[in-house]
Length: 220
Image 1 (cartoon, rainbow, N blue to C red):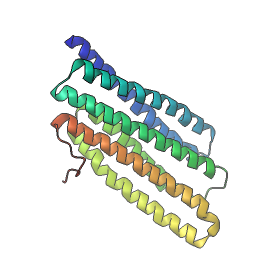
Image 2 (image 1 turned 90 degrees about the vertical axis):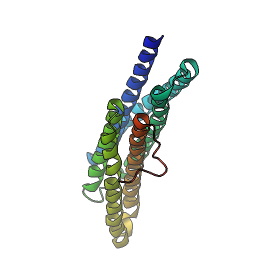
Image 3 (image 1 turned 90 degrees about the horizontal axis):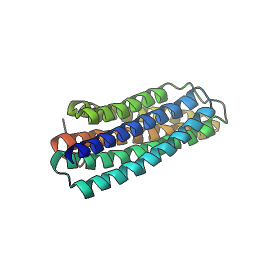
Image 4 (image 1 turned 120 degrees about the vertical axis):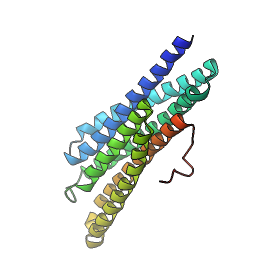
């Protein structure tokens, strides 16, 4: 029975990693579609969302079954609870990548407003946060989790910088307003994805230390 339970926990972990890989790809594809101005890439984002949503439901069901049937204790219970939280955060990340894809579709109808520099950089950091938060979960690495939490400030700073720059475009040219607003929305979606990656990192600390640091966040 114990050996079978270990196999079920391993399966849960594998499903989470698969889901995380899909979400990371969705963020990358959503930004790539805008940078290279290729709407066909958005189709891949949409396909991946269907897979992410299906995994979200499967993981939730497995977590409920494991709690009900196995009555886990201590770290096994925390692992299952953290897995359920992480699955929900990743599903939201997937939704936000879809939102970015929607903004892309509007921007691809018109000429570029400006060269994209900070937005791809922001997306790169966000993708890394998503990947590292999942790696920290697999390795039970609280140091890596703390590093993810710290990077959230870097993403926030880039979002503010992008807003300030685009505001100048809107103030100087009313014809730039719609394009600038779409780009601002993308930066906000990326910032929210980074927030969800931070939630995952906080769940790693909960898993390993049994300490919930979400309210308030840990102070260094």
